Length: 267
Image (cartoon, rainbow, N blue to C red; front, top):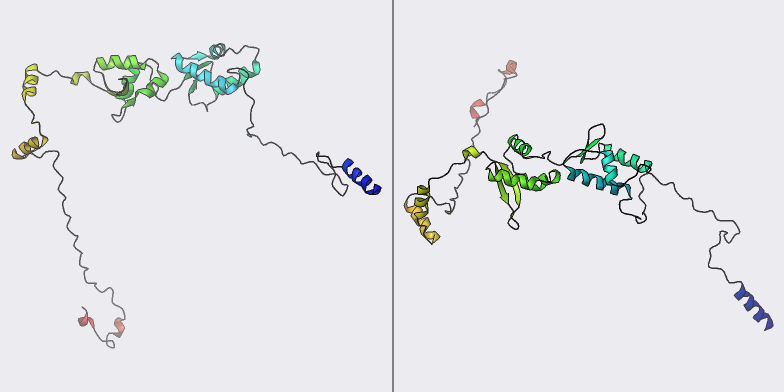
């Protein structure tokens, strides 16, 4: 019994540790797993930013927003001063300048020297440019006011003035009455109607019942717009009869005296 007690105590003392061992049961050391090389472009989770605008792409976003509101070109020093980037941050300034000069930036226009400008969807920044842009269109398409405000902060005031001068046709939003879409308009085609004609026009009473108006139009020999369209039955296409096939070039003429002629039995 003493022998059993001592062996059980030894087993308790020699319990395996939860920490894995590098050696296998056979005594050979296990090889550590090889960490594969990180391929370029792998995105790892980044720690939270310690300050607003410290990240490079955040600075680029702020710079684009500054150019959009500037309504004119700005130098790199103007942007760096707005972003509070000191000259001692040479690496950050170099990276920011490289991104701003990159042709892959669709919203930034660089003059090749030191001037940067915001490039909106429609390059319109004044009332004259707006009229010229609409006049040069191949089709009379409306222009979204939202797209105009992207690069022209004073677009709403200029559109309101052009609408007052009858130089633009404008549709407005029902909720707030703001301008939504604009078209070009020629004020010389706008004519005033004689007030006497307007009075006579408004004196014409309209029947309260729409059916009465329709009956009067039909009685006058006019077709009302509410009249149902008559379906025109299409005639079935007649099948063309095939012309009888004519014989081509006759062959075996040297055997005409031997062969019999069955051409009279053709149908």
